[in-house]
Structure formats: structure tokens, C-alpha cells
Length: 323
Image (cartoon, rainbow, N blue to C red; front, side, top):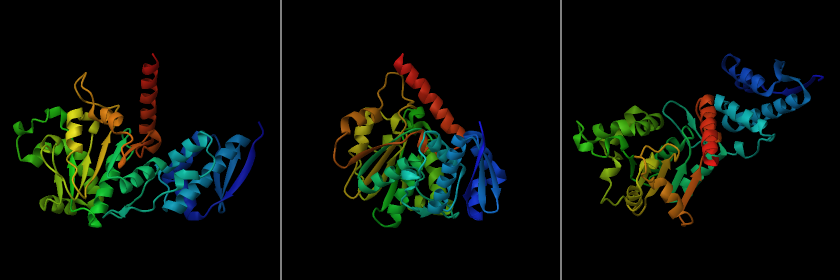
């Protein structure tokens, strides 16, 4: 088939972002789209078959828009743009509509929703008192919940943040473990700590923990409490029993907001035990004030291989369901 060439104007700083470090973005684009890209005097020359060149042009335009709205182009942005063009979405569309910068971390990283699913998730947290975020690993469920909790704390909409997670491996019998409460549950809450350290920095996180502005509590210790004026995050909710989920949801007091995150495909409960998260989906749908947000592999903000792993598992699970 005869090759064609199309040129797309691009500013130098944007071109550098599209090329990526050591041309890693360029190599990924050329391999995925099947087009040759050459930077020539402020333009990308796209060379290849007409269909590939058209896809490459659409992809470059998406990445230019990405830079305009976010000020950067990450590897994840390139992967998402490639996926969008491959499925036939040739316009920037909704995936570049963001809420802007939510906050800036102590290290100068600007945090913002990266995908349409993440944007809807953040908007749901802002609007609803109880938000369920259900989706696979790496979709930002926990991280964005922590970000929103910190924002609400800084804006004085709440007075404390409470983080909780079922300690399935310990059977919730944490009294047999050495150390104080925080030391006992630390291994199970480590992902929440990691998010807090990234969003607030180590020193601020430790100070908030000392002052009990941020509190960690295993799910077993939540019974009997009424949590008012708080932002409460229940992580790994797929590992709750229906009774635990009901207990948690009924802890919500005045002035509080709850976010429940989980992945229904990664339940660690004993065989035959129903997941409280799956039961909650059926019982609570349609209740005003509660939102269910479903994230997918398209919302994954991790190494590109993670997206491929998620797709492979989803395909295998779909095959099992059909059989």
C-alpha cells in the first residue's frame, strides 16, 4: 500500500513531552499505531499507510490537548490515548475534561483526575454523603479518596479523617499481636499510609496522627461508635462480611462523609462467605444520597502492563461465566 505523509504542528515543549524520556513515548506510539513519527522543525511528520497516519494524527492531537489541560504528558496519558484511538475514538472528547488540579503535594506534584471515571468518582464524593468506588487495582480508588479527605480537612468541612480496613488475615483478632493498636493494624493499612505520605508528606502525616486529627482504626474496633464531623474511608471493602458492612455504614453521624472502596474480583474471605460489598450493591442501589462509581481497566494509573494483566483476568473471568 502506498505510504502518505501528514505533518502536525507542535510547540517544542509539547513535542518533548510527546517524545518522552529517551523517546519512550515515541517508540510506544510507533509500535502500537504502526506509523513512523519524525520531529522536523516544529512539526511531527507522520509516515505510513493512510489509516495508520490518520490514527497517528488523532493521537498527537489528543496528546496536545492533554498537555494543554494538564501541563504534562505521562506514560499513562500516552497509553490511554493509544487505547482510545485504537477503539475508534478520534476526538479528545470527555477524557480530557477534568476538574483541574485538586491539590499540590509537598513534592510539587499536581493531583487531578486523569480519566473520565476518576472525574465522575471525584464529583460523586463532592456531591454524595456516601460513595462506593468499585474497580480493579491501580484505578485511584484509595488515593483519590485520601486526596478528597485532605481537601475537606483543609477547608474545615470536617475535623478529622478516619481510615479503616478489614484485617482479614488476622481474623480481626488483633489483640494477640504485639504493640499498640497502630502497630497491630499497620500492615493492613500500609496502602492508606502510602497515600497519606504522598499527599501530605511524612512530617505532616505524623503530626496529624499524633494529634488524632487522622485516626486509624481496624474495622472490628468501629462497632458502637458514632462518627460525626469526619471523613471516613473504608478500604478493601470486598473483604467485609454483610454484617460488618452494615455496622460500618450505620456509624455515619452528622456532618460526615464516607467513601467505601473495593475490588469485587479480589475477595480474600473464606470460601462460601458472602462479601459485604457485593451485598451492599444490591441492597442500597437507588437510595438517594448514596452513589456507586464503577472504575475499569481504562482508569488504571499504573504501569501499562497492569492494564494488560487486568484485561487478561477480565477475559478469563468472562470465559468462566459463559462456561
